[in-house]
Image 1 (tube, rainbow, N blue to C red):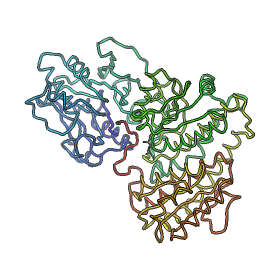
Image 2: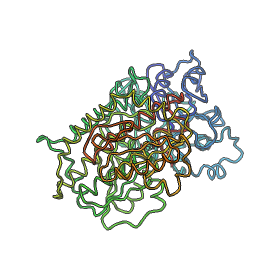
Image 3: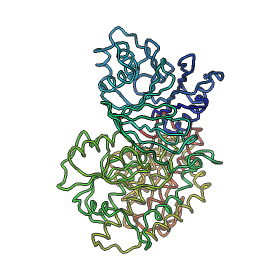
Image 4: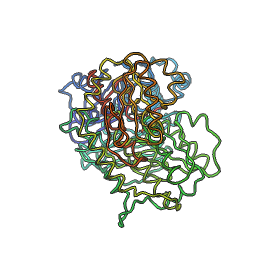
Length: 600
Ligand code: M6R
């Protein structure tokens, strides 16, 4: 998704902005730009493509101590130079970057901007033209900015420069993420802390509809109607090594390798002094008191939610529904009497999930967010948060966050079940530790996965992933991983469902990946494999130790039956990674995708 940076200080802004934008590349973008302000006024540089292309377009000799920058992920108007941000008002006075979607931009254009020639196809340009219009009508810049904000419907994070004031960046947000970072001789603006960690680890959270004036020595936060708000900065618990690739060729590979450590960190983070797994008492109470849990999520997080459902039902005895967030908000099912909503989101910023959160809060329901990002929008706006402790996930394809989501959901369900006196006959802490070692074993045999990718997927047009019970949930995730980074059309199915239609697609050599980790359905899934092999499929069976048979392509270590997803997903992630490499795809930044989808 789009990313914003801004710098107001003592050094050359240009390089800080470009470096900041590089740190936002992981979010996904198709064009980028910066605007810098010096004694000659505001100069804009923008380019379609990568930051590397923008770098070439930036005049190396331009020096300025204030500027704003943007990576754009096209929503309104194709990705090209004209639609790239920053956008400048017709008079040339104001320059703006925007993240989000302005729903009423057409109406605003008709109502206020007749006769003003638009230079782009974006919704953003309307904002900057409105600020210009209102300032020409006699308002000060901050008043014109405020008046404009009061007219906007939709989501925005904004940073604005005024050609007639080289000391100020005007900032505001609504539903889209934006932070202000503070330093001794400068202040900065960023969509996320990672972008400006190069200069500061002190950040101030901004709330929706606040107007912020960022000068080099002062940050003033006000409400839309001008009331001043004091808010102390917090220290971002990130360090540069968390967000660097180091010697890895790709973030995705680094993040897959981190998975055993992530599971161990979760054990540590959720154990009390007596060494028992625990969650905050108020979260435990909210979970135990709920008569039904509604898990709301998108993409990989939704797949983790499907496994979370099994945990809460089996360990805690609470019925659970899992819903795709973009569907739920607009087609709400009948709710139980005492529902608790669980939002699962790596980024904590997914707009589809947030719109549900806003609706269920309006209805008076409680929400728990399971996220990797402390202070993210979903976390702030929920009643409770459980953190994933996975460290920043930069690759667009989610890997370690998925494993962390499953582990944290297991902890929450286990603790809730124990508190409710359910008979749980295993020690989750020990089983998670065993799973962490098992993940490591799979990671240590990457060469096997590389060969599997070569044998099954090098020339494949499509691929199927099948499983039963939790293996089906993991099959969905395996298929998503493969399609998003290798562009091979892939689908996950319940093993028994193929014969109800999809088996028509099986041809000679069609790759079918089958997971066999659940004793109760092992024979059934093997039967389903026979059905596809009889029709020419090239089947790759991944079985858990103790359930393997001759001819299985990979045997993964034995772990507790509820925790097999933590391990069985890892070969699928690695196979997808190598399939994408074989096809020379951009593994960390797949086409058309954004890391954090902040528009609905
Ligand atoms: O940040 P979130 O977990 O809310 O993101 C949800 C999806 O956009 C995300 O999981 C997406 O499906 C991943 N790119 C998959 O790898």
